[in-house]
Image (cartoon, rainbow, N blue to C red):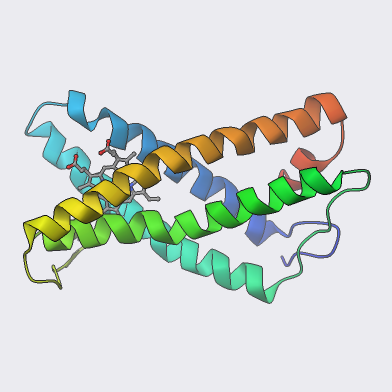
Length: 177
Ligand code: HEM
């Protein structure tokens, strides 16, 4: 269940892949919104908001899990520069797990909208409507989306390089092998 100094535990592995799928879907859907006609667009935005809010909850748990667990050590033979880049990428992604959903939630609430969690319950807008503020957080959300797309691309390329070029176990240990 828990991580050790050498391996990721089941919880970290499951949460990594579930969140990876959710975030890739959110980015893809977010950038496709302009091409979708109303009223389908409103349904899709509703699902985007609910799923993004779920990412915040999982992201908070992921922070807790990271802090309360060991982290597997960098594999042998990695250069100092590679270790530095992998740490920087990890911290940017960890911050994005909180920053992206929060900017989306604050944008929506300033725009006067609540969040319908898949029809199960509604989170009401807790902020007074202010369109300028909504636009500001919308721009942060958009900028963050471009940044997170670049970082995810880098992260995937690095994982593939480790697996196919360096032939080490960096990707395999996140697959639980
Ligand atoms: C990890 C979580 C999230 C990711 C990766 C993400 C990603 C994106 C992306 C890529 C866009 C398109 C940006 C653009 O071109 O303007 C977008 C738009 C949007 N997002 Fe998110 N999002 C996340 C969470 C949320 C949450 C939690 C909410 C609200 C509760 C939200 C609300 C919105 C809205 C309303 C738009 C449309 C903005 C517009 O077109 O005016 N997002 N998101």
